Image (cartoon, rainbow, N blue to C red; front, side, top):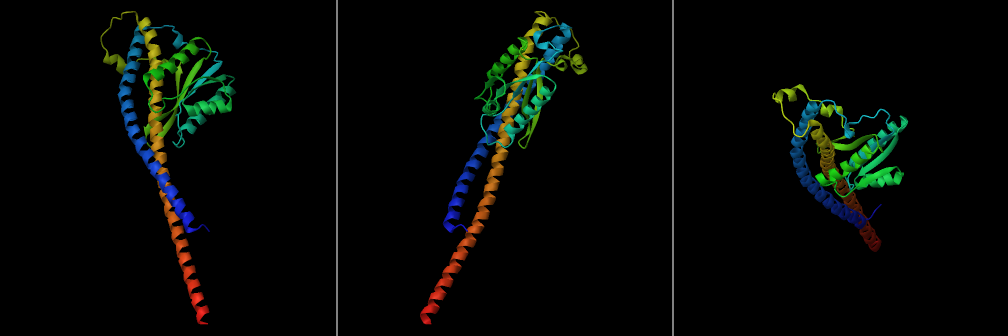
Length: 294
């Protein structure tokens, strides 16, 4: 049985750890609020971009652009897992990588080659450890991604797609639902999905007048498609950043709760040990007194 001093040291150590987990929970909570505000500010822009691109595609009619090319014989598939640069966020990183590897096995079973493009240090280290084919990795911005970060990723993916090095690009990330819920999402960004170019009846009715395009709709659409890819990747980075902070806040809250329960358990054991020591000392005193009087 551990001594009272050993139990006191354990309580002190766990109390210090709980202070750290509480501080990390507060930091994650503050960052989560900022990340949510960035997502809310970005969503109207993304929706407007899709509406504008659908209207331009409708005016352009049937066009053939590199980023729209649906290849019949898909040989190489690119997978982009979006993870964080740090841990201590529960299953946030693991569930994205698990889904990416499941997608890899499905593609390989279909006879396709898989190439990874990692976002975040956790993805980079895991892909390197497994010795998988990696086109490029980007790190250092998982907490607060910028549009320039999304542009760097989008440009490299678009270049490899146009060059024929990859035939399809899918991005795997955690979509933010709430601080307690993050949903792993797989989104195909290249070639640009045909659904993004289809104008719905509501969009057609919201624009009852004809428009004159300058330059031609085809040229405008050619400029909008790369921006659409950048916007979709930026949305995924923002969703992942918010999900990471929510997962970390929840994980640190659970860690603080577990630390408190462990402190209570050790404190109870420490009280019992101290009571046993006092009882033993009393018995020794009584035994000594009996020996002197005897």
